[in-house]
Image (tube, rainbow over all chains, first blue to last red; front, side, top):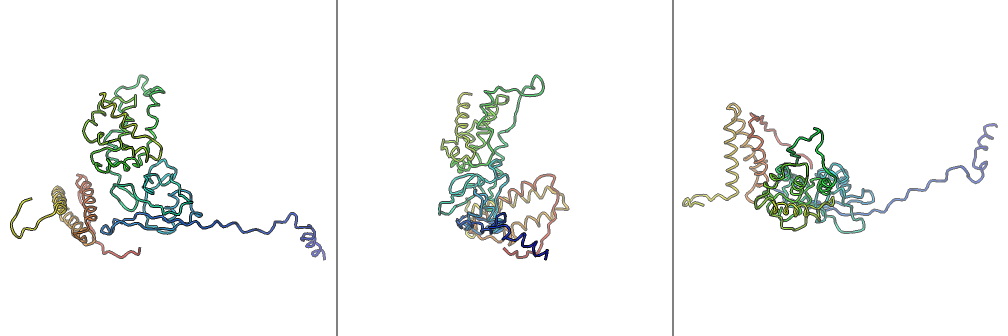
Length: 268
Length: 99
């Protein structure tokens, strides 16, 4: 008897109109499927005689992150694990995921997917570079060119207190816009002059870094650095095409640095 | 561009590049220790002649030939260093991987 009264005490009637009780759960809203086709350049070095081709993948954008890198990671995780590309930081600071997306060289982790457009997204590796596999370019020549400009401080004087090479704020400001370069190679691989003379012309990325060290007031080897560029190819293949500044995903201006470099060369 | 006479096969520029790479590889092997040289010759021959690598290419696969040439140059650069004395060359039987 006592048991029955207890159940009635806690029943719905005792509480009136279900006050205090949870309402029946409504099912969560399912986002409408928004399919987008990605055409991705594929080439396998294990079968080098097979020509490179575009492979199409359909991705539901409502179940994918906003950036192109999210989409290709989703493809690699769920659809095709053999898709090969470089990636690291996913925030646009490492420069690993540089590729040609819809004709423009950018970082895949910074390029948003156009959700409203029905057009296919075409993803190619950086143009006019030898390919290791799929979207991975061979960057060894680019790194060799960077090494050749000696991208480190060569101060001739030991500082007076033996601790720091001092630099005024105005001198430090001259380096802004050049030190932020992440060496993604988007600018160099967008330059037609670099496409045609890759072995001899240094390219906008490396030339901007060469000027970064020339403009550094702490560096003592300015004359040697300028003398290294005194030949028809290293610097003077630049014909102010300006694709480099347009392509830079970090908003830097390699073309301006090259023009300042040419001015320095003219006045040495 | 010499004319050797009738019956002399004309070598294309690409073929000449392949021959030059092979010759440079042989020159490098001559500087390796004598007891390792036979395995070095096997190694080079494998990369140029085996049907899974160089031997499986046709004359038209220019892209693939150039790819193997570039790969060969890089390998030659690393193997020509003095520290590399010998290598173990194992010819495993290939198995078909399901892709």
